[in-house]
Amino acid sequence: MHCTNCGTLNEVGSRFCFNCGAALAVPGGRAAPAVTSGVSQPPPVVVVSTQAQTRRQNWWPAILISLLLFGCALWTSLIEITPAVTNKLPEFMQGSAEALAEWQSHVVVPAPIQAVADVIKDLRDGMVMAMQSGATAGQIVDNGPPMISVPQATMCRKGPGSDYQAIGDLQAGETTEIVGQYAGGDWWVIENYGVSGTCWLYGGYAQIIGNTSSLPHYDTPSLPEAKEEEQQQPAGNITFTFNNLLQNEGVCEVKIRPASSGSWGPNLISSPIYPQSSASITIPDQGNPYNLKVLTCAGGEYTGEYMEYGVTITEGASYPFRPY
Image (cartoon, rainbow, N blue to C red):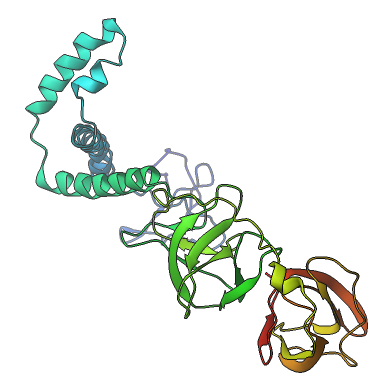
């Protein structure tokens, strides 16, 4: 029988052409069934339509044009070309700037873009006002009177330094008004919290709320001088309470001497004054003011030495020890 594909003569009864392998017609006109076992079939050809891809590619020009228009509209709404601006430009640019300003005056910005521009303008104006208000590091801009607060208890004194007597304190979380500033360092003149009058507060770690640029500047006050009648040696003793307001340190030594002259006397306490504790101390009445030396300790070791000058000690008074 002949192969209908290549014309080769094959033996009777053959199912496939020995030359080309094509199926041979069998008696009755039926083709031999195809045998697929062991024969790899080519993968089907998938035709992918490029219509969707073309549509996606067509979006890019529209997106780029939209971004360009949005940027131009936003620029025209934020940048104000005024005579003050053009006058600062070189002469060869001033004509172009004036023409651009004329064009800008006729631009109609779409409402959505103008809304975004208004928000950005408000943010820009707020930053400019903050920079022009004199706010510095550690300050928060506020329209009310300047206020001050501290993260930990701080003593308030008669002047800027530990040489001045402590006449009050500001506890953590308390806030009081600032009435003056000191050009020589990080000190503020404040309303003495809970007491009438003013005092000086160290502001190295304080938080300032409000604008302090218009506050008056205070000069360094002179240290108090001992009055002639106070330098006399009155008879008797003075008993006062020494309050250790420290959180983690005890007081191991307290020594005192007249502010006018003299050497340090003996230690006035027989045992340490623990943190947040107090002790009653009796001294000879040598006339105010006094100088005070305090040694702090923790775990049996000295941790610091503090000097207080010009301290006024009266009978029954309470002295708060809290170095700034």
